[in-house]
Amino acid sequence: MKLAGGIILGVALWLRHDSQTTNILYLHLGEKQAPNTFYVGIYILIAVGAVMMFVGFLGCYGAIQESQCLLGTFFTCLVILFACEVAAGIWGFVNKDQIAKDVKQFYDQAFQQALMAESDANNGKAVVKTFHETLDCCGPDSVIGAATHLWREDLCSRKDSILKTFETVSCHKKIDELFSGKLYVIGIVAIVVAVIMIFEMILSMVLCCGIRNSSVY
Image 1 (cartoon, rainbow, N blue to C red):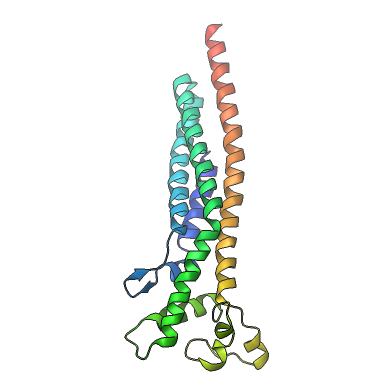
Image 2 (tube, rainbow, N blue to C red):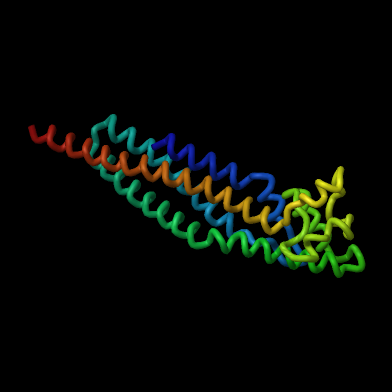
C-alpha cells in the first residue's frame, strides 16, 4: 500500500512539475490565464497518493498488532480511496478531449493577437513563442497557420533547411499529443494501483476474519 501510494505521489508530482505543461499552463494572455483544468486531476492524485501512504502505515500496524479495529479502518479507507480513484478516472475520461480543446482555444486567441499586434504592449506574441519553443511547433491547423513559418519568422524559429521548415508540425497536433500522452500515463498508473488496492482489500478482510476466528478458539 505504501509502495502504491509512493508510485501515485511520484507520478503526480512529476506531471505537476513537468516543464512542458508548466511552461504552457502558467501563461497569461493579458489578464486571462491558460486553462489549468489538467491540474485538477493531478491534485487529486497527489492527495490520494499522500493518504494512501498514511493508510499503508495504518494497515501494517494493524496487521502487526492483529487488531480487527485497525484492519477494519484500513479496509474502509481503501474503499473510500478506491471510490475517489474511480471518480478521478471517470472525470479524466470525460474531460480528456476538453482539456486539449481549451488549451488550443487559448493558443488560437494568442495567435490572433500576435498576428494583429502592432506593438509589444500586447503579450500575445510572447505567449505564442512560448508555445512554439516548448512544443517545437508552429501555427494552428489552418492555411494561415501552415504558412506562418514562411512569413512570420518572429513567431516561429528559423529551421536549418527548407525541408525541415515544411516538416514543422502544427501546435494543435502537438497539444493533443502532449495531453493525451500525460493522461495515458495517469490511466496506466490508476489501473495498476486499482488492482493493487483490490488485492489489499481482499487480504485485509481475510486477515481480519482470521484474527476474529482465532480469538474465538
